[in-house]
Length: 145
Image (tube, rainbow, N blue to C red; front, side):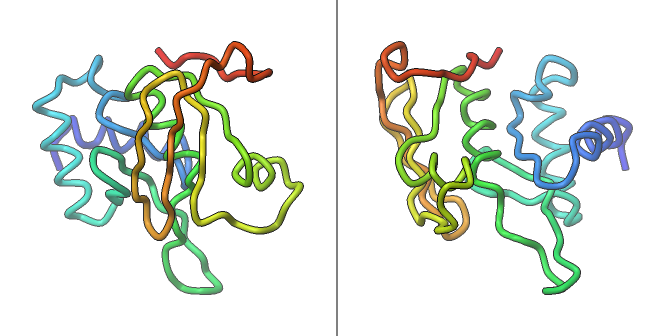
């Protein structure tokens, strides 16, 4: 394994299982060409998983099921927010689930965003970002830099 791959893998492992990320989480440190090569190699080796276009995660594993678990959709949403420098906030059923007020897991996770309307397929879930003036939406998350 190349030294850059080792450094990237070390940072991924440091964040723990379930962490979702994009190349922008590493580009300042390693350069874009090196990151593409390293992420591709790590995916091929089965150390990380490609969740959707441009988004990867360090998969969680269930001993009981003896398999990898589905990606953490909230982590995927935050990875995309960092990538595009959006402010986001869960909405509707996604918010209820994340707050623990509902045990139902929505098939469509909706986040309010100061970015454009977009949808992504992540595993068996749909992750939707709806443009909104977040200043009026109450508590907002910080913009990712």
